[in-house]
Length: 198
Ligand SMILES: Nc1nc2c(ncn2[C@@H]2O[C@H](COP(=O)(O)OP(=O)(O)OP(=O)(O)O)[C@@H](O)[C@H]2O)c(=O)[nH]1
Ligand SMILES: [Mg+2]
Image (cartoon, rainbow, N blue to C red; front, side, top):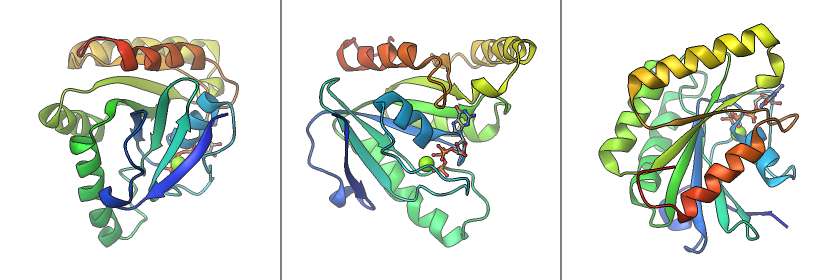
């Protein structure tokens, strides 16, 4: 059974290395924790209607699938005190750039939001530090009607095509489970595939 492993507020308080790790990052309220729960098939990660809920790195392990999912605090959340934002950043950067077993990431975005400089900067930073493969999980797809779905699919295909970041898009719903099997398959490939392709 997937289970919660531990929280960490510094690199030294992260659990000892074991399974490969996949980091979930994205703006606060994007649906990271909900998506992790959907992928694990259990409500392990805390979901809140109040953005900025996840403040530590939270490690979940799915031993059967052979990976850990790591829930990162949301970025771009203005209501939190600036000093706290500054406190998170070095640790998150340390984790993303230096964690040995980290094999890839899932950038989580609300499918109704447009791509912004925050995402571009984040990916630019990632690329400049290490060569991790990633997926773009576009959440809350259940909230869109057929026409809106089509529009958002076209929009993200265009954005990702222009950015040429090698990011694979997956439209998902952490609530009704749509798209999760596809994302799980992709995450499985992160564990075994050669670097640089998904
Ligand atoms: N309908 C729908 N609601 C979603 C989905 N994913 C997340 N939500 C809702 O969006 C809100 C935020 O979800 P969280 O999973 O807590 O978001 P988060 O990215 O973990 O947020 P932080 O921990 O604050 O960074 C909650 O009210 C969720 O119920 C989805 O796929 N569909
Ligand atoms: Mg969260």
